Length: 249
Length: 305
Ligand SMILES: Nc1ncnc2c1ncn2[C@@H]1O[C@H](COP(=O)(O)OP(=O)(O)O)[C@@H](O)[C@H]1O
Ligand SMILES: [Mg+2]
Image (cartoon, rainbow over all chains, first blue to last red; front, top):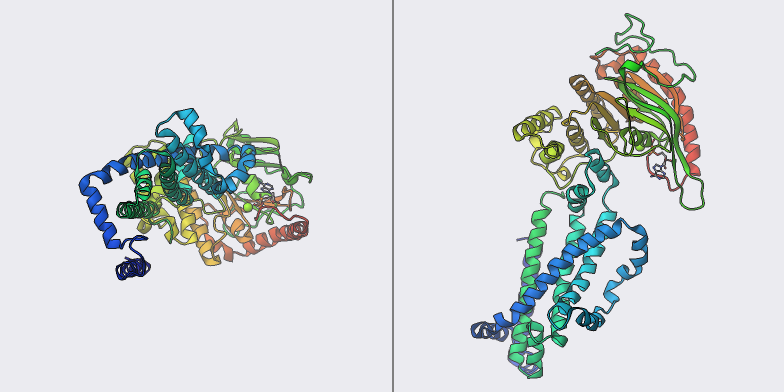
């Protein structure tokens, strides 16, 4: 482990410990927040009762679908958009500040189009996460050295071969930034959607526990989500390191 | 490999042979039709300018003919259109006017098979190891594995890269990366090799030695070589003929025949006639370089040389 990595873990452990102490000593009211150890206990209880699996399955299914589609469609969309500079110029203002666009406002529209099922929720995740992938794809392709495209022509590559063998590997680094964002955004999109709109999933369960003043369950689920997202990000980072192995000094 | 090509005067092909008197404006660089390998006729290139301004007249009209197996060098002031000329000769860019013929077939819109290019910039694939970079073209061509391994290893050894086969380009020096690019080009056994200032980033000593390697591989492959360089000594030492370009829009101010023997190497720089040759090339290039610098002042936004 790197020095920075150990420092990070120490800082996180320190924060958790002080939170534990604050809660246990009554500095933080138990009805406001429960200590981290209690959260872990709550997660264990939820897991034992089978509720954890039941609530997280639909969320994970939807996040996975949204994430995979956002990355796939985002890369394709970004690549196509890059070859259409006029369309790109029209969309540029939107892409430059997409995070300011309230995509949740599209939910009723998606319900009208897809019906009352999981798809409106997934669509919000896709739109939210997909735009990040489109943007990073565009930025990546902009920065591909022109000489590499000349090399593609020397090897007489078709358009698809050029994308697969030169452009995608060349943009791997900026693209991965977009992919990491996409994971976070599809989670945010779907959890927030579940929070207000759905009848199942972790987001819905958290909202339900909140309404029922069930602090223990609510914090258990929140902690569970945080741990999972952190683990998934670490997994992505490991993929990134593997992919970029040897490519930089 | 024959050396004396034009105006052959028998018995004058030793390293001490005097270069041909440079005529003040000799005509197009032509060769006999039977040995013709590549030819540009009336080639001109204009780049469209950002809205409103005049287009950039980068090149020509230029005529050039390269013989099969010849080593042709091109020198010219920076920004005179050398890289543009190479792009057109390779089929990477279309001329605004004029025709390009390679092996009796006109080039249009695509790079014909048989042409290899080493670019001015580092063009290795950073995501592949040295070995995979060199093997890339052979794998794409579907060459059988054993043969691929044999050829890749041969060229890695030839270019002194055998110990770095598993390294990524990022871990190599600029000069070694350029050698990766040369190896990946040669492994495909091109019949014509175009090199655009391949040793631009190297120090003088390394450049001379790389020149020797280039001569060695020219002899080993029998390929036609077109070398673009800004270094007069490099051009005069390596080439059978040296085309000297004018300031932008580039044309040939002259084409000098060197008459070095086929087995020459960098030691030729100590030959008295070498100094004469470089002196003459410089006298033309000096005027053109002054013009080019004058040009550059009104020329903001152009591509770096
Ligand atoms: N794609 C381009 N668009 C506009 N101008 C260009 C382009 N490529 C080259 N030029 C211009 O054409 C001239 C010749 O460029 P280049 O062939 O790269 O010169 P050299 O290789 O001799 O240094 C320069 O003035 C350069 O600014
Ligand atoms: Mg150049």
